[in-house]
Length: 341
Image 1: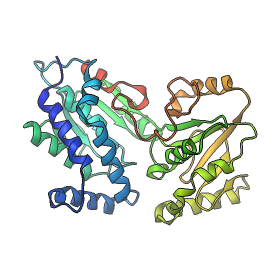
Image 2 (image 1 turned 90 degrees about the vertical axis):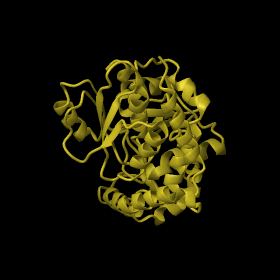
Image 3 (image 1 turned 120 degrees about the vertical axis):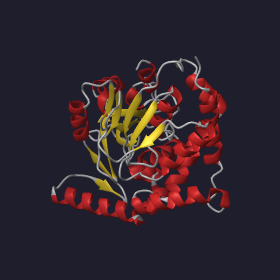
């Protein structure tokens, strides 16, 4: 059975609503208020980053795209709906919304525990959906989760260890830290490198899809990367980002690490995949097959790969924070999981 048409139509209406968001329009007064509260509550959220999030969702939630996404699945409306506990992250605006709409479209009930850093935007979105569809299947709670049938939880590696222990007896999806990776070969155009800059610095680099590690051919001129991110120089004026930059730079200087910096971003040669805020790690390679093997070996640390090269699953430079609806976090098909509950 196809997804409930009322829910699908509600989702598409939300897409139009977000795409046309205008804080100067009285019609958006309530959403504008929620945006304001979200920014006050989380110093990493800005009006610009939230607008980017709305625009991305507005471009995704169109009829053809939603129908293409849902075509492979069947949902049994006749079966009693289960309650799915959702524990969401709060690193970038609305980061848990995909999980919510997956549960919503599957016909199950969602019991949502938002991150303390993202309390205002998601309830607005779900209220819009429920009003349009004329049904209530989503609740929010700050209390201990009880009376649920399955769990989808996202958090740090430390939090994931707790989740694994606490929710081991339930069907679950537990997500840990991952990062985006870029692979260059030196033939990238200026436009592609500017796209890489966006992949690294959009949302201040806080997203699991942001590029934190770059593979470079030996001898690559690192000034090309600094040039590509020059348009982001104003980011240093953001208080929390600037503080992180100063702190990480001081730590690396005191540790006598070798690194390069341009006044607002640092590059350091390192084998790790997760770099501090305002930094990216890079590694040189001599053979592309070695890079492909390393990506495969460390696939559990990688959320996405951006590259123009022939690498399995690679996406275009500049598109790290523009996943499709079917680009599931950690490569785990959330709708298929819900379909089988």
